[in-house]
Length: 221
Image (tube, rainbow, N blue to C red):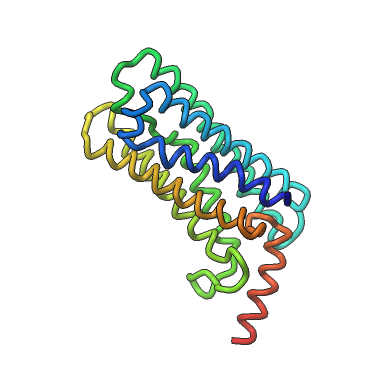
């Protein structure tokens, strides 16, 4: 198995957990404790994938032009997953003592969401573009955009979820859950594509090859 697929596998499994976990029907079906554990397990998978991504990027962290951006994006994203580890563990603990947990479910951690968003912006800015739009060409050219969109969804979920304890608004609760699921779906899309092709622009080595292909396409166009 390639390093890229080894990275994508945990990201895919973690994303599935975060797609399924926010739905109230799932929480009602399996119970609050199992729902909380679903998020916690998902966060552990995210950390596993993030650790592999960081390990791939670290040796080329000084390899310009793509190495530094890939390393910074990976390291910041890994930090975000660690924040999620903490908050999802707290959610497991809360589910054991708070009977209202099945209503609140889990809210994306603000610090973790910020880390994800910063990481997504770094990766997107480092990707090949034609003007402001991604440059079509090599396999996975669309991944930085979809990944950044997922980070934005997680950020919206964090903002919406923050006000739930204070207001108890069903609208805010629904926004938190829906955006969590949408963000995870974006991450899942990228992970599945990498599992299928074995290629991803998260890898500095493959990003160099992709940049060469894009440059050839732009020149020929």
